[in-house]
Length: 148
Ligand code: COA
Image (cartoon, rainbow, N blue to C red):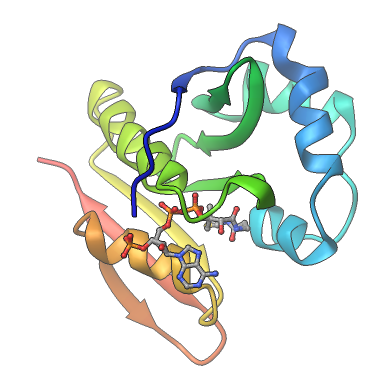
């Protein structure tokens, strides 16, 4: 479902660190695990590093100046994202991944890929909808889309 929101998707800058930190702080341990494959809390320093060095591109989804989602693409084509629990099922995750695919094209990557858990229904739906090939294992789902 896509809801008509005043949604803007843009590249994150170093000025967004505090707001991204607030978004991560609002997440449950399970959500943090889904986003980072780790249960530890993310520090502001790590967010700075993510934006300035680690990720090829970090996008944020913003509604009326509130950051409601974040998505990062890495040089090897892997990406991960999170949408604030209050703003899920509104199409924001789909839009973030669509824009990451565009970014992967612009950066001339040959593929874009993600890993998730088999019970992550929204992520599996997004992958299917956007034409990713999905490989299901017992404890992991791997999605990949080749870019021509
Ligand atoms: N159960 C079943 N379906 C769900 C769902 C749920 N809990 N949440 C969303 N969906 C469906 C939507 O209705 C939509 O279906 P449609 O394509 O048929 O319309 C599809 O999944 C995609 O939903 P969308 O609204 O675009 O995604 P979202 O904004 O809710 O964000 C995630 C999806 C995965 C980013 C979000 O759930 C999240 O942040 N999860 C925690 C972190 C995470 O898992 N990140 C992924 C790491 S790779």
